Length: 331
Image (tube, rainbow, N blue to C red; front, side, top):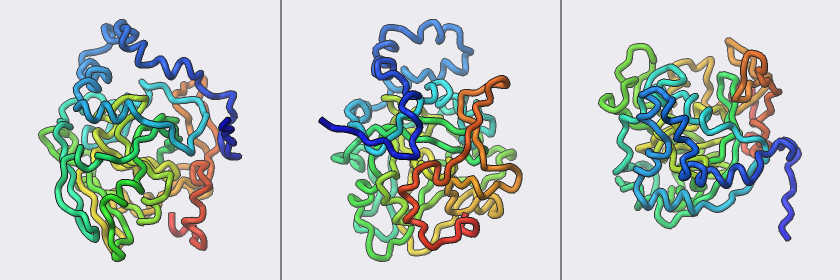
């Protein structure tokens, strides 16, 4: 019999969402559990109905997501409701409002999807997503997501361990960093040409190679047992649970292995506010607000749902990556 030992930083098991509720989510949708809600939602929300969007994905991708195995480590903390996860997003390519991605992301075409690999690796070139992911393990992992804006979620992601993908691409001994780039198409993404974002698109992010290879790092292709909705970064996004959410770049079209630390979007835009490492740290405040607490969604005026922020978002198994580093200087 397998006995799972709870990590000391994990929330209590009393907060867990009942297994029967989670496992029956597809059944409820198929039976029309969302029918009444769909009829009552505004026209913009209908355009991004998650069930229809999932059905529109290629069969191979839906099969991969549906066949995901339970991943370790995980957390038994109460899941953030699906509606909050998919309707409250930062994805400036679709607008700066939290509901703009859900309203506008249906414009983005994710099938077919091509992905370019460049730099210090044996396997480079442009690949169809199916060919890139073929044969790689797919797992479901429940991770906390902590935004630099001091709100947080708990999301059941479906994805591929980043280490498995990188090993397939075979980085050379010269590779010290991994750089990522998001799609930037103004025809599909109205925020790309907006004067209000202040961002020089395409959106760029990066990790040290050892961070990318860490067992916690995930390349997500789904959430809540379905393929990724467009507003959450379809068809492929990075998930690095011990870092602030802006590091988890969405709708990736390019990965490059580099010797030098790559330039990253928010660090270029405001280096005093957004460091390259962006590790969750309650002792290092944002210049304009405290990081000592976070709002767990869903919340309300009468139930703000504040809780203490944990170093590395509670994933202290990554501490060894930063041994000897000044976490205030290297924020």
